[in-house]
Picture 1 (cartoon, helix red, strand yellow):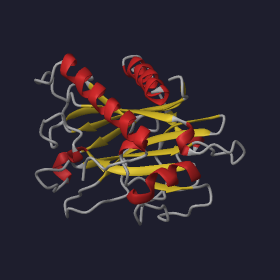
Picture 2 (spheres, helix red, strand yellow):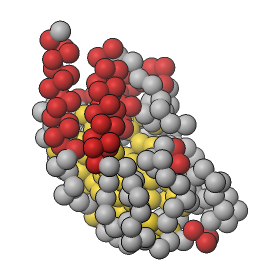
Picture 3 (cartoon, one colour):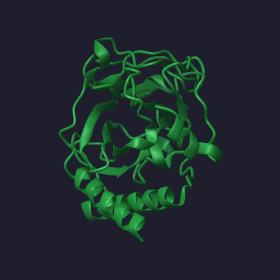
Picture 4 (cartoon, helix red, strand yellow):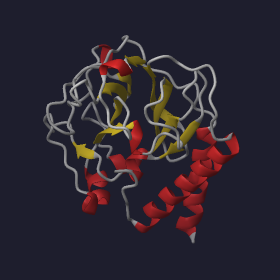
Length: 265
């Protein structure tokens, strides 16, 4: 019962942060665009063009990347402006109908200095994805580290492409490692029911939170695809609040039970 009450308090703090994090910002991470230790997911993925911040050994990065070129293949093409914006031309892509031209990629390192001893399960994480293609924003939020169990996990010694992906032992990975990364397509369920190939501007935010819901480090990026529409129908704020509540509640319950499940693939 005490653990349940603690989880409810944490969820309440998280929901407060959900509606107070629109001011997160970032610029080229570490002054170089490179994250620590390297890009550990997949293979052939170059470091660089990451937007974020590294504060007191906690590093958070986001970037956009061309997932489908005219041949339908991924490229290490980021079209990054050096601040927080990534731009892609849909006329230069041959993406499947249920996928977007771009992937958004995230990286978290809670001990980038190698001196704090923090592991991933010492914190919670707030990820917000924008489902409004206009210059406005309409966010859905959840803990992307707890909830996505195929994240690539590692340490400061993990080499490029050498991250561990083991959903069956995910809880153990979070308690014994300090780096989590992944690459996700907008078509994996991040559209709010809209066409993943819509032109527009989409904002992505990622924050590392302490156990009281305080923001320790954060990143925010905008990904622009083609022409940004002036207006488009989108789910109501109330429906998004309920979606966020359900996602957060599910995440909290899974953490209490020590279980984690993949939601989008």
